[in-house]
Image 1 (cartoon, rainbow, N blue to C red):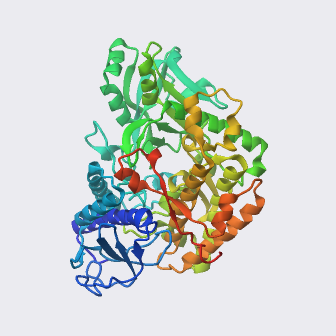
Image 2: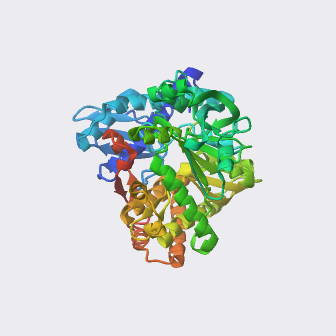
Image 3: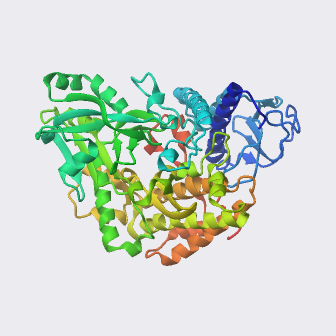
Amino acid sequence: MKQLSSPSRSNLIGDLAASHALLNCLIKEFALPMSLVKYEWPQDMRGIPIGVFFNGEIVKGTPLYIKMPNLQEFFILVDRQDCLGSHYYLSDIYGKQNQDIWQYLDFGQFVIALVDSCSDATGQKNNELIEQIFESRALKEKIYNYASKEKYNCLENYRRSEQALWFGHPTHPAPKARLWSLVTDQLQYSPEFGSCSALHQFEVNKSDLWIKANGLDDNQVLAGVADQINTREERAVISLHPVQAKLFIADPRTQHLLKLGVIKDLGCNGHPFYPTASIRTWFSPQHDYFIKGSLHVRITNCVRKNAWYELESTILIDAIFKELMSNQMDSLGGFEPVEEPAVLCWCPSDAQAEDKNWFKEQTGIILRHNFCKEEGEQSCLLAGTVFGRSTNLTPNILGFLEEASPKNLQEQDLLNWFKQYQALLLRPVLFLFYNHGIVMEPHLQNTILVHQQGQPKKILLRDFEGVKLTSDVGMNLIANKQIHPRVQQSMEYSRHNGWQRVCYCLFVNNISEAILALTWKRPTLATKMWDIVHDELKTIRTELRRPTPELDALLNGGPIHCKTNFKVRLAAEADRKAGYVELQSPWEKSYV
């Protein structure tokens, strides 16, 4: 990349990071499953300056040509041909429609052409999406300006890795879109800017708290939520995300209770915490727990609230895992869960029936075990950042491995590292799915890599709120429990839906991104890595206790499911409404 002035460079990086994520969406959700992509040069090359493709520099690569149903065409050079649509983009983006000549598309032109052609293909259009795309791109530029000046090592320790997911989800149209309300300076609460803040605290009647825990008493739970030392015996202090507190205070129901003294506003005080990549979960190296609070703000696809039924399901899943870890450890494939042993929310005892859930969801808290206490903060890293991009859009992991290695990295070093990583990830997820009907969500932001001098040691999987149970097997784990029907409904997945989620998270979201990062400027190495995965899957299959029809089909070259993050935003639907498309397996031709 040519040397540019700081404003020009930040503008370029913002455009590239945003357009590459959009290209990923286009290719994975439309071009590949609809057979609209060809890895070949267009027949009509008019308008494409041969030999000058990016920032005035000559680049070489593989041509990628897309023709949409509305006859909109796109062209770009990539570093490889990939059946899952995982590429590095090497050139400017060109577009044309009908009989026009090719034209270089700046970011704005590309966004309009992309959204229009995809909306035409689906018959759905979300007028807010373009605005969200531009908001996300603008924040990426601000993040670049901050991070390029700070220049700290984003894989130095756990906290750094949580706050250095610079460009967000690599296959989402607007990964940095945050529809904050009542916030004048969102950077104050955005992890990418190294922010640190005390949580906003309120004093409430202890008798109005709803607390559920596994292995903790109420006082231990409250101590995990806030310092209770100077609180009267009948009262308790709870913590909210500072933005959530503003939303809570602004509501007339809360204002009425503040005037009556039922709630006492203590402001932002107490121990400082760091917001993690999820924004609503807070971390302190010294605290025993992460504090995952409600946040009624749309971040990417979802309003990040702790729904009342999710609080209940979280504590049920935690109990299930505790029992399995105690009694059936050998059936879990080396599973290392991050415990979520307690949940809490508050609702005034005399609240109207229609307001009870509102208060619970405003104040809901999940306590998550601080694994850094045992594993060491220097050894724990968010996988999303490990395989994410630096401010120069190069993979973070290569510098990390070079620093940890006493010699120059060879291809075999990369293959050995990947072999360890994929085994640690695949085994527990597939053992849980097949042996117990438990559907994890092992995407990059739920995966914690614990390393020893740079080498994978273990994988921790987190976020029990999102864990589901399959109808055919998993729901038997709660068959004898008295559970509210809405809670039970939120936990149940069909086997097919469970496999779609597991397949997408493992192979598209996680492993393919790991392979892409590790094969920077070594694209031919990707095939060897997928061979390693295939061998591991065959070994796992022999160790599972139940039939594995989905895995059998996959090993025989069956398709891989890919979640449609872009399509669900085009439809302006909630994340839970997202569907899946099928992509060709990396093993379709090799092993059939």
